[in-house]
Image 1 (cartoon, helix red, strand yellow):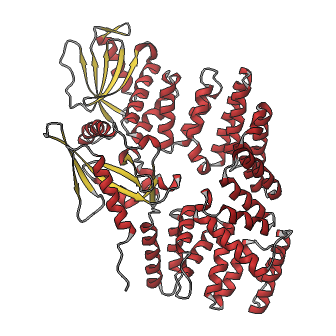
Image 2 (spheres, helix red, strand yellow):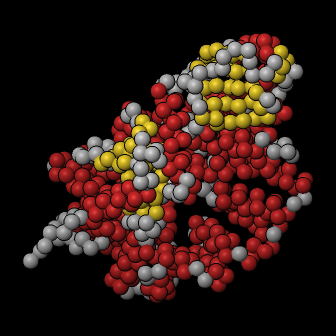
Length: 633
């Protein structure tokens, strides 16, 4: 008897919500939304005496069984979902629950808000870090954020930002209250698109009311910025420009507002203030502000401004280290940068190198070369390799570090030097004993044509570390299948010869028998050429040999890895009645991890090419639901 089983995703969802409820203070109340129209529930906060505070928030819990650091620590939201969250009166707390570790991570949706990115993309990725892990201070942090959010949200935070200024001393910065008030008011008039001075209150008058959105206070020896009752920033007068330097002084104020907005989680409006003022403010010399500004520009996607900020400070001895640190804000965006932006970053890093050279600090200089080498891997492998070698020359101890040999092995692999890559990975393994490196070593052996050695090493790695990833399981499966069917343990690969033979298929209509003969000849030159296997899949598919076509497309997808079409063909054939579907999980997990939401965009395109669009759409929807049920998105 087949007893119905409850889907894992359902139990996982319940487990995650229970874990979140258990983490809340006992006075707080969590109410589930039934049915769920976009958020899982609402939390109402009561104080220690059980009295209502009026503070509420929406909660969306996303759970996963996946243990991979990248996939488990990110969630994807549809653009429509993001727009729905924006329209809500209450803020949305995103909760990531990782079942394997029983850990919760939380992040406010509005901290990641970037309407430009939401409007330009079908999906929006939210990343969680260890800083977002739930701990004993999280409830206090939530209360503080809710008070600030309510204050800001209730007044619809838009630019220009209403601003109140309090001058609470009779003389401030060697000026009378009236004189300083005049400087500030006239100076800010130049920026009508950023701020609108609502009122200026002197010491002899009543202080600003608590419902003011943004208040700048000059009191004692400090300038402070407050949202409602929440203080966000305090700067000693000694760190800001004199009002006599009017332009710098006003830009210090604008920059301070930008940093305060960033700390309130309002990255998008913060970016406007920072962009407008960072060229003329003196506050960049304060490392925390400098990095805050860089992070804000990075989050807002203002890469040109971010690179300019880094470039402007890179040649200054007093800020070269800060600029170097800022460069790491670019890492996540480096692959999406234009060639011009990458070149500017490169020039700025070389300026930092020059300053570091003058300081005669080999350790720091070698670390810089290594950082540049890491970044250049996606742009210029030769330059990347050169920087790694420079780092090793300055710091010979790199030869005793496993990660150095692992990186060298990676570059050699990407350059097609597979035998040398294998040797580098061997050094990395000898130094670390890390079995994940054995998987990379097996991969380099495979591409070196040493198929039997590669397969034995893959078998040795089975079930350990990196090999638990579905993609590597598929690679071993495909390698085992093709070497067994072709009875080939070693091959001196000839990619050019294989390509030349395969090009005959493009000459015109050929019989199936002739086409298969060409494929066999191409495989004799290169058994693991992805194009050959893809073309074989097409031939088999056209002859309705769907089972063989499935394995050919799977082999092509695994070998090419980044070919979306190969994965899509494999996925579609995997659901045919005559195909054993025990590989479906591995295929979907691998394809989605590699391509993310681009996978579904390509599947959508394939639907339009089908004669029976309705049936094709049903299949894609089924695939989408399976990916969700597996906790991959």
